Length: 419
Image (cartoon, rainbow, N blue to C red; front, top):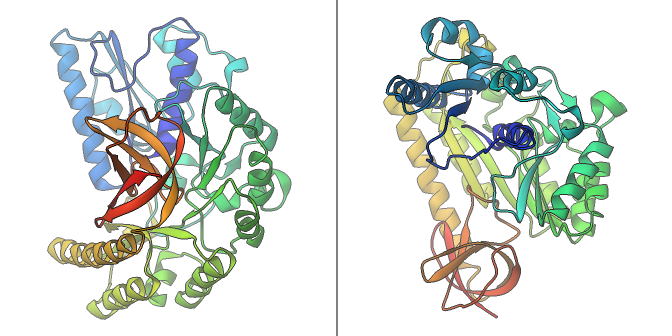
């Protein structure tokens, strides 16, 4: 459950179990002897969803449908004592760094030589590459450092080796992920090394797209933009959660950037890489957010015209700095602001997609659905962004690239035909 970083953890766990000659499936719905639930504990909605899944499998165990239920991940890291006291029917509860213990409790052997080995759950042509763990930022609203700990970069040679292994398995798109991608390398090399990393990854044979997720706006490394401009296999795509634009709120959030530096950074992105597509995430209803401050956020979205955008309502998280501030925005006000923000973004997305009609793009085919194929351009990440629907095409190969002319557009999807 939760984010792609959790997914990579699950893939590594499954890789270990599979090499122990255990049959392993991922969200298959098949009956199994043991079930491992990898939970999310980021915000209230995700916590509630994780609890519901745990309850469902405990009931399945009581009904004799499965033998054992194990729980791991962010929720159990954060609330280990509470879960242990509440769910006594669980066969094991583990934090985010307890993979070896989980494997041994399942009855398998942890194999150090398999570190980095994974059982992919994504389509075989793309994979997430987690380059670091934890976060050194102190954002007031965020519980991730409490859960995942301090920033720890993986050595570059390990990541290059993992990328080579993924490429050998047919992976063509690497999606780089971390709690803070731009901080990569500071702890082990003494400086930011994201540029050096993606430069070396771009040389891995078979990797045609490299995509950057979860970058941070403070002191963004310029060499990353230069590489994106110069290298043909680094996607012109940037995922950079900005959270807000109002200076008072940004200061309270402890973000380390201001409205002015944010605007300057977006300007720099577009100067270096004019066709860059920017995805951001914003928070509405942060404590004390006035209607005027929210309007400032709306105006910022109107002027910035983000290509992709997500947003969520603020939820107070225990032991964070913002938890000490009164959560004084009514839930219905938060939801109203969220709806207004996303309605604006839908209009922007529709206009941007309409402008793509008549253009031709390189498209990676993700899957076939009934009588059409579904793919993505370099400007779109799987699961969260636009898709290209290709009709009246036969014998396209999933995982291959094709030139597609855009013939129609909606707010969040494109339609096209093979060139």
